[in-house]
Length: 195
Image 1 (tube, one colour):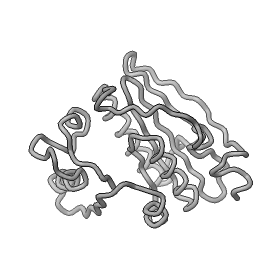
Image 2 (cartoon, one colour):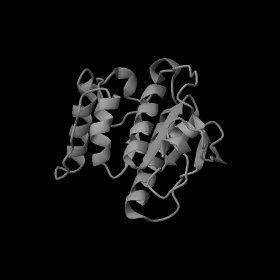
Image 3 (cartoon, one colour):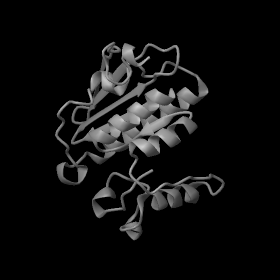
């Protein structure tokens, strides 16, 4: 799901695209890259912004959601839809030399936090774009690979997912920091008054 088209500034960090696809819809370019790797894979593409109505329809159909969005509003909308549908969310982000990854798993019976427990929806967050702020390209690959690992482990039910833990990567020193994240009972998305 993506509303955007491939831009030259994407190529150093979004390996699904190449210069021959600049200007094409990102979803079609990514689907073509996946088919090149494995023609037997079926890819559903949706070229639109993932707004609340779209997410309410599509998230309940997923076993796990991987959020690779680049803005706070979309991250909040994806989180809210995942909490409402009881679908685990693997989120990752990178800007400059800093990356982060976590799993937000509010499936029934789990008392782990959601994204909004740590990053309240009403917080004032300056939006920064990779095209203008830059991002250390290998960092995106590292975070993306970890997201894939977390999603596969969730689907297979193996290991201990990152639910309740936020991992931060400093790309300059290649040092990981992990912090525990507690569920906020007053969270506007998953708090006690929301069930």
